[in-house]
Length: 236
Image 1 (spheres, rainbow, N blue to C red):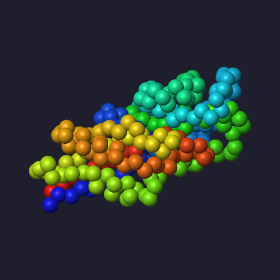
Image 2 (cartoon, rainbow, N blue to C red):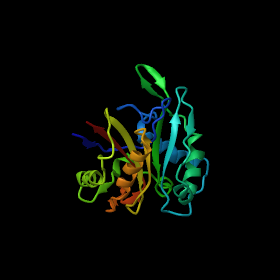
Image 3 (spheres, one colour):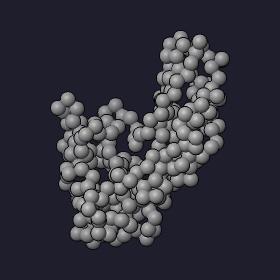
């Protein structure tokens, strides 16, 4: 008998064989952690006399890779719409980042390695005097599905028809999608294919058929885009 098992994991980046998707647990990406990062970010804004963004509602998840030698490289924004809406914050983040000196590379088995990381940048807050311990990540609330994750899992599984496929071993695929600020899903893609295009297409369609909205992730009550990653395992 065939069965379908669904697992759900939130993720902030994309897998790369050479670059860690995120820092190992309990490791800091910046000397002094997030609190020091935002203090230094605020200091650079002041020292360089940078200008605030006209749109006070702009906020952007600034993604970068920290390399073993503590140099950084910016991660290209894949969503053109998000970039257009937050271009000032995007450009401001890059300008400030090149003046920051606290980058700390990740370590695995005692060896420094490259790793991706990200920071939420809210210019309207960072140009003001920061409250003690300022860190937007502390107030980040993850996205939620109406009726709970199990409800979403059941709705996806209902649309999956295994009768046309005869798998001889366990098949693992990964679906990723964006949950926009309006609670709608978009950019549904396979991160890892089963090797059968017809089956892959069915999985993407099954996810897309789930119409109930999500409650978007938010920071300080402001809705933000988030990425959801759905590993799916099918076994006999």
